[in-house]
Image (cartoon, rainbow, N blue to C red):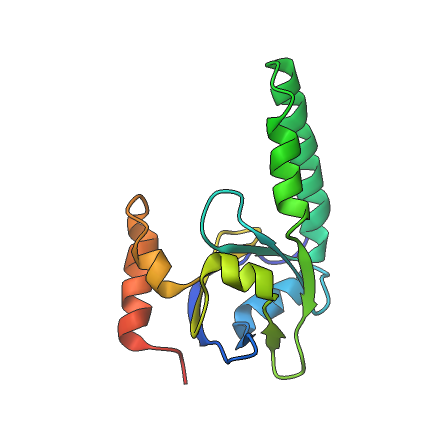
Length: 159
């Protein structure tokens, strides 16, 4: 994939309409990767957050899902990939940021992730996640995520 990787983290306030500012570094990475101003969002398949990636990564996600499907069919599992694909695609949305870098989180995704007044952005290279910081703080199996959430809850959104 050409362009930058997603790196770093950030916290953004969320208003009543679900608007929030996408970190400038993330917007720059999407543009560098050829994604314009579009962010593909979906419910994470297993974690209580929103998973996000640029338009170009969508093809890679499709290829990964097809490869996983082949592996599962070889093992005789004929339903896992359908359930996973349905979970990813039925909750997918494409959003674009406005000139000030704000997007509106789709209601369904915001509700499923429990995001209300703040959103924690966490990069993972080819994409990023958006968490409710209090939910991230409760993730016992992920010390790094808990540490970030604790830090941002203490510090608050960047001014």
